[in-house]
Image (cartoon, rainbow, N blue to C red; front, top):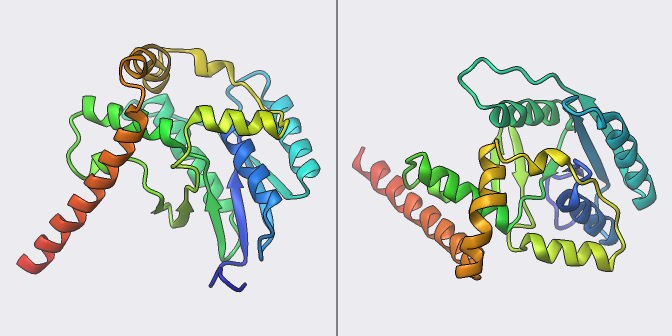
Length: 224
């Protein structure tokens, strides 16, 4: 398609939550030169997962985009956290669902970026890890693009309200036993109250880390 060399379709990792609903609705409103699909992964971890699947299919139909779903079983071997195991299972399933020359978009945003940076800091990561969530990357053989990284969660919620969108509120997001939820619910709110612009500065720091890693890679390449 013109302007989309090599890309024949676009898929959105669609959980039905606020972020992916805004992304899918935005794409449906654009005059893209390629078709759009919503890909939903059912982890089977919540009693309402069947209802969420029905909701996602209905939203996709209302937006006039394609829809496909896949059920996965999340297994942990003790080496991974439940969050990491679910994430890996989700991406593997998405990779299996993608058609040839189909680009996968995810709805990561600026608040996700801040959470990722803080998580990696407490785990002692280096420059490579502090690049955090990248605008585009490769994972499990897939090309991933994250077009919402410049938006905050509050901005996405405002857009959703203006567009009168309906989305799922996953109750597990309130469970602060999980590391990311703990940061989101307990740690980040007082930090943002003190430093309101920290999501922006964290995103800027991640950009600087990406630039620093490129320099390190270039130096290492020429030293070989």
